[in-house]
Amino acid sequence: MQTIAENGDPPSEKQNEEKTYKKTASSAIKGAIQLGIGYTVGNLTSKPDRDVLMQDFYVVESVFLPSEGSNLTPAHHYPDFRFKTYAPLAFRYFRELFGIKPDDYLYSICSEPLIELSNPGASGSLFFVTSDDEFIIKTVQHKEAEFLQKLLPGYYMNLNQNPRTLLPKFYGLYCVQSGGINIRIVVMNNVLPRALKMHYNYDLKGSTYKRRASRKEREKSNPTFKDLDFLQDLHEGLYFDSETYSALMKTLQRDCRVLESFKIMDYSLLLGIHILDSSAKEREGEFSQNTSDSKRPGGQRVLYSTAMESIQGPGKSGDCVITENTNTMGGIPAKSYRGEKLLLFMGIIDILQSYRLIKKLEHSWKALVYDGDTVSVHRPSFYADRFLKFMSTRVFKKNQLLASRHHPDLVPSTASLFEAASLATTISSSSLYVDDSYPHDGTRFYSNSKGLPSSSTFTLEDSAICLTSEQSTVETETDNASVLDVYL
Image (cartoon, rainbow, N blue to C red):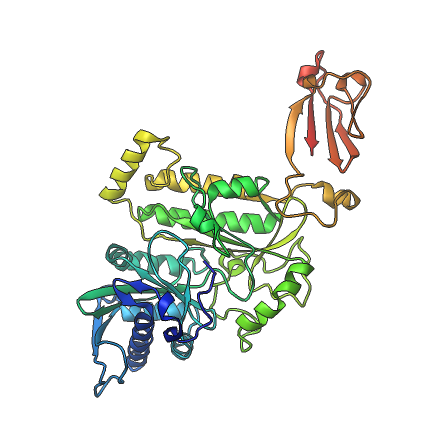
């Protein structure tokens, strides 16, 4: 998602590569967005602050911006267009809730050309990011925009109760009308900051049916992988300290409960992984200087927009030691199984899919040809339960007593994130048919029948072996009752 098409230069220099959406050039869409938002937000400042009323969620304001200009609008070199603003007072409240001042909102969106991002999925939507990395602007379909407008009263209630959330933070809903074509756009928080390189991106649904990145996606310079890719690359999961893990799970459970109440399904967790190692940071030095905003050394300024803020985390590094020179950009500290320090960035995306008739039919059809419980389209309650189970058991885990914690000398200092050398498995001692000892690549396995306690733990790292044991309180006559926990 974070592959940048260009660094914000006018698209006229790349006419051959310019994208179109509904037969409209992306440069015209970007220009209309900036002109329209500039006018509507500026006009909104003249309206007094007041409480949001129910009817405010359904108000639509419209202004016509001809290319030659008018008494109220500036001249421009794009085709004539009409700009509609949905629920302006309600969205003004949302922006104020997150500490976004009107001047800052206008500066972020209108001061510099919008940067077009490569399309991360098959939706066909266009994505733009503001030059200061604050906001994502996405084109949405008519049904999605209509659903978001209906969602606003409940969204308002939820944000008042829980401003810290991994759900998308919507800051504006607009529509550009030109030549009989409607282009609807939504302004949201930016989940993956460009100032830090995301070494791996994942779009996770908790589904396994065809959830693998396509060949075309893998050919991108920074592809977005899916569930099956994650289970293959990171089958051990990602580890947090207990406090951070609990905060993350609590936030995910609350957000999924909200989505289920609105009958929303087919959403994803967008997960960006930044590896904190010196060599990677040295390679990124020039990239970070070019993409980060020197005016914002502390990262994003929107309240609760970073990953750590969104989960109500403790705001500390926990077990992950991060130097003062490292700009974490609000990432959540985590570790790989091999002890590598990571920064995770995440947010729930694509929440504008409700379980309507067409989705029910899609699930019924897929269930006939495949296991219905594994397809992504499913009833909201089942989808939420499966999503949470996948995140809490396969993706995110609490830090355990890893071998590296008690025996750091047993762990190679140059371990790779995706090195599959650390695998936890439990085997029965009855499966070990050995006598006194059996040599195997320089490591000896011992039979439980030779005097070891009935429950023993072996830790093997690079031909070294560490043994911890607990005496069983129940005496058994056979070796079948004893278990060896071997961490390879």
